[in-house]
Length: 124
Image 1 (cartoon, one colour):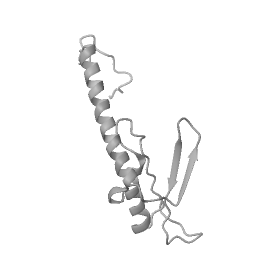
Image 2 (tube, one colour):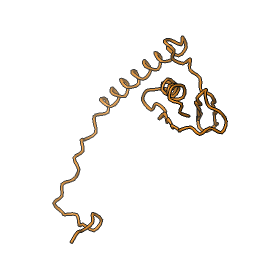
Image 3 (cartoon, helix red, strand yellow):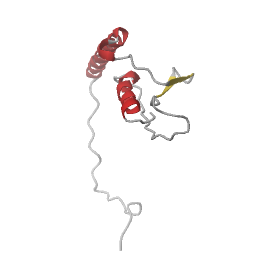
Image 4 (cartoon, helix red, strand yellow):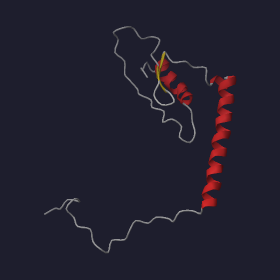
């Protein structure tokens, strides 16, 4: 006879999950400042790279770009192989950039998306 997890009773002597107590306010503030200093430093470096188009960063362009007025800005880029002919079926790869909650920028994916479209004949 088997029992499912939904019907198994919880024992009273089961220990509570281990959690750590919150850090002191000054420690949390210090860590927050360190994170934002790192984010701003990296964002400045990436903006410089993009502005000067160093080593090809920021120079690749998708076939289509569509911007939607949702929130700050929602942008979709479509990369279609140059060898594509109307009516031809292509494999599809969907690349989702998470928005860079801590670090990152959607243009970091451009090299990969361009490679898939131009060298692997994949619609991205």
